[in-house]
Length: 123
Image (cartoon, rainbow, N blue to C red):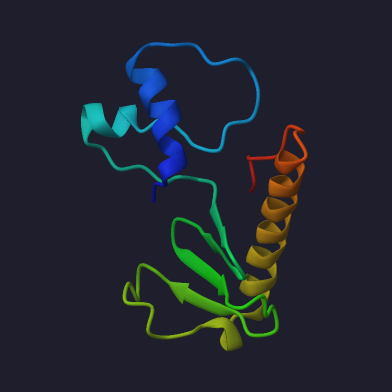
């Protein structure tokens, strides 16, 4: 998976520019562009828009709609790319793990909004 926040580090890598040491949301896609080799992202991508939040890993997507954290949706993107089978009821431990990561990501967004550095390296 990739996300628009990957543009900045990709463009700076193409231009061979060094970035100051601080957290960056994205990662460079230059290795993918140059070699065509697919690799795992190895860290989730968080999304927040209005009252909708989600976390996407290399395999799973956790979604909360309308700010309702009591009704999670969990999809296995490898086995179910159409996201037609909600696994949340049968995978509570996975939901809890991904929810914890999503909460940490949302906290890091709040830190960023305050002008503080934030955590981008979620497990």
